[in-house]
Length: 358
Image (cartoon, rainbow, N blue to C red; front, side):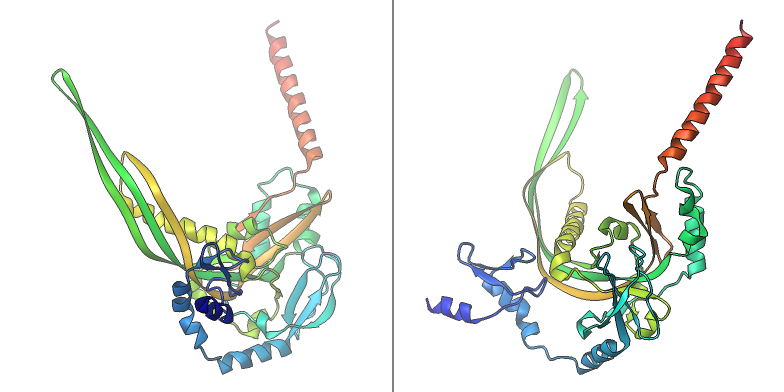
C-alpha cells in the first residue's frame, strides 16, 4: 500500500504527448488516455528525469510575448477557420470557403512556432505551375481555369508537428532457407532454419503531421517531403505578405498518425536488416514508441479551394519544392458532350467505310 500511495501522489507526463499519465491497476503500468501510450514505472521515471529538472528558457518566454503582441487572429463565422497574420496585414476573406472574416483578437504565446521554412516560390510561379497542371485536365469546369479563380491561390503557412520518436523494437522469427537440386535420378531438398532476432532502439526523426483539421491530411502528405535543412528559427518577418493557420489539432490529436508512420519506419529498418529467406515465420513483432520530442513548425504551402456542385476541392503546392497535389473537379456535361461527339464521329467514319464496300 505504501508504494501505491507514493505513486498516486506523483504526477507524470506522457513522454509522447505531454498529457497526464494514470496508473492502470490491471497492467501495472502508467497509461495515457489521449495517445494510448503505456510505460512501466521505471521507464517513465527514467524518461521524465530530465524534463522534471528542466528550467524555463527566458529568451523563449520573451519571444512568445513578442508573438502575442504582433500577431492578429481573424475568424471565419462560416466555416470556423482561424487565420493568423502579422499586425501589418489585413485578412479580408477565408481561403477555405471565400467568405469574409472578422478580426477576433490576439494569440497566446503557446501558438508561436519553433521553426519555419520560408517560401521559395512566389505567387506568379505558383500560378504558372497550376496553369500547366490544369491544362492537362480536359474535363474540368471552365471557370476552374479562370483568372478570377487563380487569384484565390493563397500563400499559407500550414502548422505542422514534427516528431522525433525513440522506438523500442522487438522482433523474433524463424527464417527458412530452402534449396533444391537434382543429381542423377534423385531430387534433393535442403531446408535450413535460423532464429532471427532483432532488439534495440531505433530513432526516427522529423515525422510530420499537419495540425489543421480543415485541410485534408492526405493532401498535405502528398506534397511532402519538405527539406528540413532549410528550417530557421521562427520570426514574425516570415509572415509578412502571407497568412498562417492556427493549429486546432494538438500533439495528442496527431500522435496516432505519428505512431503509424514511426512504426512503419521502424519496421522497414528491421526488415531491411534481416536479409533474404524463403519464408519467415514471425512470432513477435512490436514497435513501441518510448519517447517523442516535438517541434511545432510552419511550412509553406500555396493553397486554393474550389467549390463545385456543393463539394469543395482543395489544391496545394509545396511552397519550397513545387510539388503539387489535388483532385480536379469533373464537368460531367462536358464529358458527355465530348463522348457524344466522338460517338457521332465514329459512326460517320464507320458508315463511310461501310458504304465504300457496298
